[in-house]
Length: 158
Length: 418
Image 1: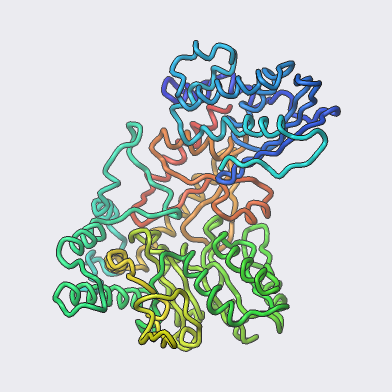
Image 2: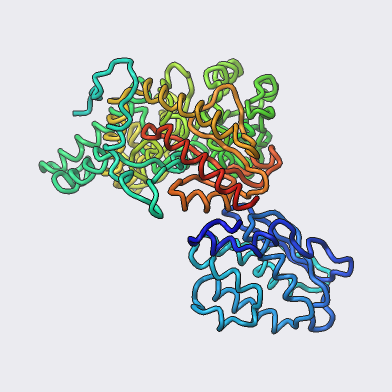
C-alpha cells in the first residue's frame, strides 16, 4: 500500500517503495573506472557510486551502500536514468532533481526530463529528508570528477 | 525558596502524571493533527512552567552581573546564582557547593577535565580507559588528549546485551591507566552501568573516575558520594532545565589540584602583568560572565523534579520502560538493541525492512517524536552491526498511552513497507 492520502503517501510513492526493496544496479560494474563514496554524517547513511566512463558518456553505473528507503530508491532510480548520459546531461539532471526535492521547482512539468524521478516531488514536504534523496547524486558528482582509477575521501552531505 | 517541596502529598505513592503533564505547556499541542507524543527525551527534555517562569522572572526583576556589583540587583543575581549551585549540590548529594562547576553541558564538562586534569596527569605511554558504549562526547576529548600526549585510549568491551564486561574492564586497568571515563547510563542502549563497582575497581588501582551522567540524572536518584566517583558530568537540558547550562562535579581535593581551564574574569583573585593568582574552586574554572539565567533555570528544574521525588520519577519511568519493552519488543519485526538487566530512560530498536529514518518520518506524522540515527554513538552501532536505530526515550510526563501511540505508529510503518 502507499501509506495514505496525506503527505506520507506523496513521500512513499509506490515506485519509491518498490525501488527501495529491490534496488537496480546494486553492484560494482566490473569495468568501473571512476568511483566515489558518499556519507551523511548526521544519520550515518553511506553510498558508493561506481561508473564506467566511455569518453564523455556514462556507459555503466552502479551503487552500493546502506540507507533509508528514500536514499536507496533515489540511488537506484538515478542509476537507471543516467546510463548513456553525458557528463553535462547528468549535471543538468541533478540540478533539476535538486530543485524538485527542495521544492524550488513547483511543477513537475518543468522537470519533465526527470521522467520517473518526478516521484520524488513529495520529498519537498519533508525538508529533513532532502539529504536522503540527494546523497547518491552528490556522490555521483564526486565520481564524475574522479580521476580514472584513483581513490578519494568520502564526499559528505555536510 | 531553593528547597524541594513534596507537591504531590503522596509520600511513596505513584505520581499524578496527568497533573505533571499540565506543568509542561509544550505538551498541549497537536502535530499533524495528532496529540504530541514526545519520546525524544534523551536528546532533550521539555521544560516545566516553573523553569520558564524562573528564567522570565530573573530577566524581568533581578538581571545583573554577579560577583561584582554592590547594587541591589547584582546582589540578588549573585544570591540566585549561588542558590542554584546549592540546589545542584543537594540534587547530586555532593559534600560542598564548591565542588559544583557550572559549564555549558556534559560535553564541556568532559572537555574541561581532559584539558586540565588530563593534560596535567597524562603523559606519553599512559592510558585512558573508557567503555564500548560511550557517547562521542566521552570518546573524542580523550582521543584528542591521547593524541596530544602520545597516550593510548583503551576500550572495555560490552556483551551482546549491551552490558559492560566487568572482568575485561578490570583487566584493562593497568599501572599506566591515568583515568577511567564511563557513562552512568548509555544514551544509545539505556544500559545502567555498575558505577559504584567500577569506581571501587579503579580506585583499587589508584585510578580516578569520571562519570558521564547526562542520561542518568533525569532518571535515577544520584548520590556522588555514595558512588565515590571523582568527577560527575551532566547537562541541564536533559533534566528539564534550559540548554547551555551543565555541571561538572569534582571532589574538592581533586579540583583544587587541577590547573585552571579558561583564562579571564572571575577565575582570578588578583592580576598584574607579571603574575596572576587564580581564584578558588569552583570559580577557577568559571572564567567570564556565566550563564546566570541558565543556572537559575537549572536550579528551578532540579527543585521541580526533587519536588516530585526522584525515587518516584525513577519508579514511574521504570514501569514505562518495562511496558514499552514488552509492547514494542513484542511487535513483529522489532529487534531490541540493548537488553541489559539494568536499564533506564531509553528503548533502542530496529524494525525489519524499515530503516529508522523512514520509521521516524512515519511516526512524526502520527505525532510521535523519536530519535533515529546513530545517537552520537557510532562505535555502539558498529558493535551491533547496524548503521542506526530508532530510540524512544522517556520522561516523567510520558504515559502508557504514549507507548501505545508509538506501537501503533510502528505497525503503520510496517504496513507502508509491507
